[in-house]
Length: 183
Image (cartoon, rainbow, N blue to C red):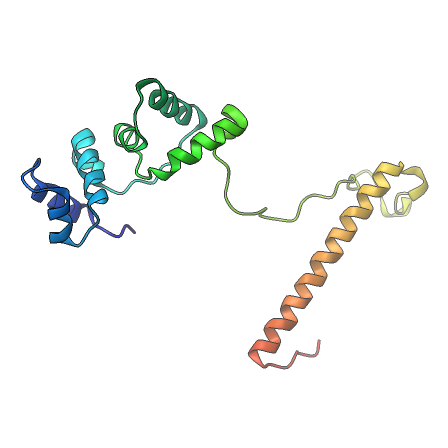
């Protein structure tokens, strides 16, 4: 939820009235920073009432590049470019510039936030349906050195994960003061 409602933003822009009051006067009247009012007025001038509503957007790499190219070609400031393209966060433009300078168009592609949703798949092949229990486990001597090292790394990672989980569980029990259950 945004801090300021769309109706409040419209009221502030209406009070500004196209220059009847200065940004600082409006800021003092409503208890806001003048730069925020300037942003709202510019967004309202470029996009109307829709420019004052809350917007959640994820921009693809080509859109980000087009914004940057327009900024550089026309010599627009970040604030002007944000108002022109209806981008609510001006700070993301400087992030996009840094990303483009470091890695080009590929670096501008949006990334999913957060960590992995599940444990990664093991690097070695899982037994297929054709393998039966009577065949037994695959012979380690039949595996290549690379496959054995990959399996070892996976098992070490899994072991470290379980140790960390146990340590966190014990720490949580210690904080709550409960005794561990006997299972």
